[in-house]
Length: 340
Image (cartoon, rainbow, N blue to C red; front, side, top):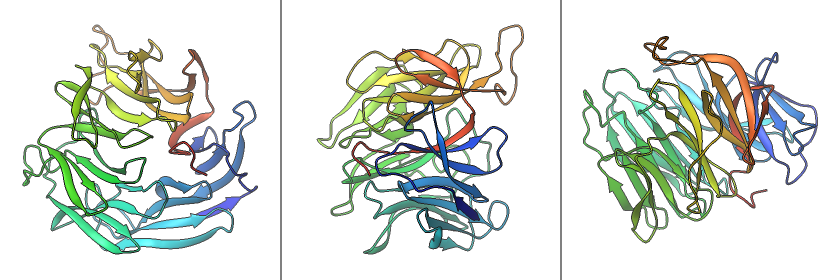
């Protein structure tokens, strides 16, 4: 993969990994002033990009299709120096799932090969396997219900895995789909036999997830409570200040609608009444998302769900939607308030 940086990234700026309309590859976009955004760096090649810090980005390179060898790399944007974090000889389903701790010193990831799916934490102390999750059965993927994620709590004290691919029909494991481990002693502090679509809030250690009863939250005291009864959210994405989580949900016609959960207990808000999908926070107050073709009872979207309509938007949580030149959003920085 090639990286070219045209300007240095000032300390404390807000950044996004995006694809721009009419521009090849993925770029680091400085969105501190959204009326005058600046492209700082551009990448050619690679996939599954993540910010480790404001000046370090990680990505995956594979040699081919599912099951091929691959590696996770880290690039320093100030020097364009690339280093290998870890490599694998066979990358099965979900081998691309990984996340960095808030201080960038620990990596949680899933390894996937013929022996099954395993959950790891890699740090200066070595590579620790936290759980053998089982094998991924041969079946289709439901993008509105299936999910696989790993992630650290905002305070860096806990790490979680949530995945549905080894726990459903035609899979070999009865491993709980949600597990939370305390990093100080690698002890399991919570697991449950149901759940999907998990996300840590961007402050403290609160893990949100979806069950058939609605959205619930786990806290380190062991308390689990319902946050929004009946809400079947999809792909939650927390704001870096910890105040909100954006997501989509399905309406009766099969379209996605973008919602915003107030983590301080306020009501769930709707960003737009029009079909929108794949939301993510660019900044603590700005949400990017894509438009969808409208499904109706007379013109249903059919198998595979609604298609994108080619339009993208930025929504200010104050209530204003405007068009966007970003056609895809992969990550934003900071992840947690106070990160530099």
